Image 1: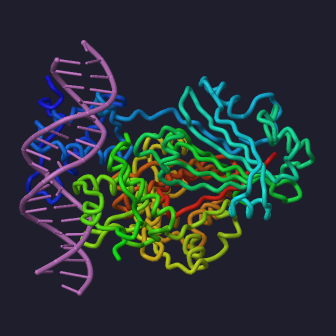
Image 2: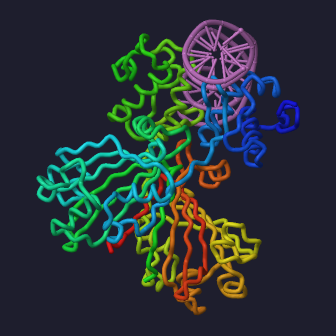
Image 3: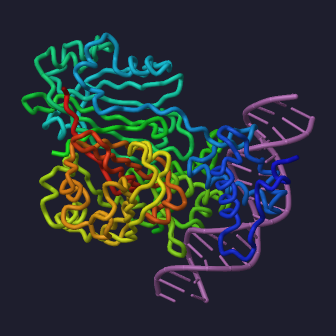
Amino acid sequence: MSPLSSGLLGDLDPTSDRAVFRQIADQLREAIDRGRFREGEKLPSEAELVDHYGVSRMTVRNSFSILQGEGLVHAEHGKGVFVRPRPPVRRLASDRFARRHREQGKSAFIVEADAAGSHPQVDSLEVKEEKASQDISTRLGSVRRVLARRRRYLLDGRPVEFATSYLPLDIARGTQIAEPNPGPGGIYARLEELGHRLDHFEEEIRARMPSPDEVRTLRLAAGVPVIHLIRTAFDTEKRPVEVCDTVMAADAYVLAYQLPAT
Amino acid sequence: MSPLSSGLLGDLDPTSDRAVFRQIADQLREAIDRGRFREGEKLPSEAELVDHYGVSRMTVRNSFSILQGEGLVHAEHGKGVFVRPRPPVRRLASDRFARRHREQGKSAFIVEADAAGSHPQVDSLEVKEEKASQDISTRLGSVRRVLARRRRYLLDGRPVEFATSYLPLDIARGTQIAEPNPGPGGIYARLEELGHRLDHFEEEIRARMPSPDEVRTLRLAAGVPVIHLIRTAFDTEKRPVEVCDTVMAADAYVLAYQLPAT
DNA sequence: CAGTGGTCTAGACCACAAT
DNA sequence: TTGTGGTCTAGACCACTGA
């Protein structure tokens, strides 16, 4: 029995003010929410829905595009439209920069992913000196040029985040921080060795839809926003010693923070 | 001179693999990014673009729908398609729950908005006892029923966030916390008066596209994600005494946190 | 190969906004 | 009334997938 003759989906209400394609989207969304279609499962094809509802193909496609915009489904050319599975999320704990986590040989990302049983990778490594943007310059205390470290992180082959660290040249130039591999404990460990004992971090969080560039870099599905995180590291002399600009696939992350009630 | 004859937009590349509607979207996006069209400014009408590019109307509309999905533009029926202005954002600082902020008479939201020169409102107030969801029950330590306090916050008439606080009945029932107006300093002040001195908060942050319900409640434009924040308040005996579930219009907020480097 | 979604056309009628 | 976007139709051809 086809999914359409089995009453999974209802009829249209011709008296309703609601546009036909919205009604169809509503019915599909409700069916998904109720678990009638499970994660990864294929929805009825456009042709089947055209038959079922007696509407034109563009109308059905409009419905699908609504659901795609909501991040509920994704289309695969030649295969069908599928309920988008909720991918495993990476939890960023508020103690992720605790000094004790820097004592081991590998980077935090690698250690944590290994522990979670996933396969971590870092690629697109680029380290170079460049002119600081207005924003970065301000955050670092009016520096003109900076050392920029770019990299992209993947979990099980899926890109989940890319980040750029900016450091003042007078701190980073000629040190291991300017090398592709900053060594055990990452650049924060190196900063402390260089005498910049870290005091605290400030993080700013925004969420927005990705630019086409970000869609490419993170291979984002339709309807997936990004989390934009800007972290500034301060040493014990209250000097900003690093700014890290990170863009994360929002469906791959949950951020956790702890706030004092003081 | 029309904006189209003045070279604001280029021609299509018929040899390109890129779909025509994507090429048009690219050109409009670039023109917006370069400031050729400023915030709030009207883009060429569908009809003008049909003429300019020599394509059908659906093709032009497809381009617009891409830009809408990116949150770059919004359409106004009967008026045109406009570059979406970046609204003012509310910054949530990491010390926003510091005890000193509870000493005044008004709620944190009101005080802060007044200070920023905007006009704050709270509506859709609802306070009732109800069955705890599985998630809320777990977070509050296996309680069956809770006191739920729902409310929506607006700035200058624009809804920016709605939130529900959940409290265990044995704490909240019969207290001022169960009243629509919890009094000066809000429910956190009442909790402390009741002997639950607050120790710290834990916050979890996610970003995703809004449900149709959330689009309605927050009057969200297309292409605007939501930030979903779940905060748990712990008293000095490490007991969770409140869970607050908040959904915020992502274009209205930037969250700020401070992390120790300990 | 048949079935799927991706793109595109050339219309139509409607509802809303400004004049 | 004119111009705008919103909805919908009935096609067409294409590219990709899987049997």
